[in-house]
Figure 1 (cartoon, rainbow, N blue to C red):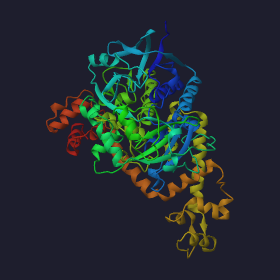
Figure 2 (cartoon, helix red, strand yellow):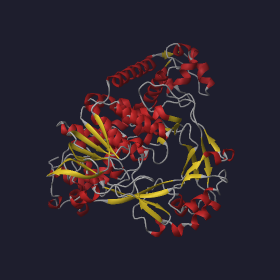
Figure 3 (spheres, rainbow, N blue to C red):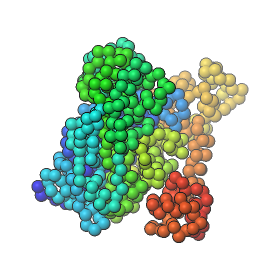
Figure 4 (cartoon, rainbow, N blue to C red):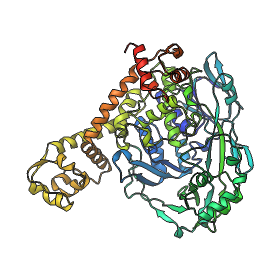
Length: 624
């Protein structure tokens, strides 16, 4: 096969690869997406869901930047829930259950509509180099393909090894081959390569589950979705269910520990702390009599169910016996057992914040190859790698988001400055500016930046401007319109809050914790005539305006703090500085600064083991 030269080659069509290819092509680069199986684009190889705590914020950020994950999720969801509604708006996190087959098909449909994006089904078994630059890839069938930049999004396929009890065999996912050659080649070029582990539970035949013994978990009445673009919400939803393990289940599982690759030492990679296997949970939390499980449908028409929380690499006979000891699963049958998979990853401290590797110019890593876990974490890295590969080959500055601009910025900064020793998963607790990084305002934070870059469409930008104008008008009206006691006291008393004794601004009245703007609009005639709450777009604007009014003091305080700390990120450090010559630094600081070579004083301050005293020394050295 003779290929023309491409601007960018993206290797792998998982969530990272799809976002990378879409972004680079939409920006104007000629892109080739190479994957082992074109039928499995953005495959949901684990749980069939998008979003969740902090992950939902990431999907909304991807959408605000012009990525596809939010739109695909909205078009293929079978259930939607806004998590953490009982907490403050900084914690609200959208999550949807998806039809996994529709999800992959919709992703392929979206990609095939993009000009300048081409596809090739093959296995990449090597990279091509010219000195310290990557110049293409070598494939099993097609031979050499030349490009100016390459984005690797290999997922769990690099030297992938699957474990089920004492049985183990190569594979990137069950039924799909592993990929060999790239890890070995990069190791020879000085890259550090390590191993991680992840796993997945068995898939169950829903016709054999007794749902009457489970707790139903329906979706929300109001489906807001992920994308900021206007779309029709789903008219119906499928329920999920909650089950629990028991001491009897734990006893059965313990019988298989002797055959477990995790406990016998056959698995060398470290597994995810926050999504452990069921055998790891009952060992680590031995004082617990039971653990919660989520029974999740995999689509509209299939009877296949995913048992979230029951990931296992135990022998299939033990898995099956333990499953049937769970209430509601006494007669259950399975489609396939759970398994664990080990794979190669490259510690991400070897990357710039653009996700370009430090050792090889033009080579970018995104997704699980960087030690992360989760579709959303992979997708946002793919988006940023695709953007920055395009920026690089066109001699433009990279797009680097700060920790106060996006969860995406938090994730990438954590990876580059702190590294990983276990699969990285995003949580709201990782973001120090989470009041600023809410799911409702991702468009306000990111859409204009993306539009200026050329990725966010004109339609998306105009939609953002329309929302911004309506929110500002609402806030202006509420903060400058007064009400008399006669107009509002009946409303206040109905919500158990004290009546007014004199005129007051509506915005001031709204600060009371018992009140919300939706109730105010529905109850007060002069507001209900002004704002149509039947319109989903208007409801989004109402929610945004209320948050900005109620949390104004907290938002301003956090914004001021972010601006002060972000000043350190504008202080550049010299490249290839030998920190061992700065003897006023602690020994640990000298070792870590030499290893990680941070680009700014802010990045240096976030490296584990670097103290404020060390930052002061660096500031003095720089003449600050």
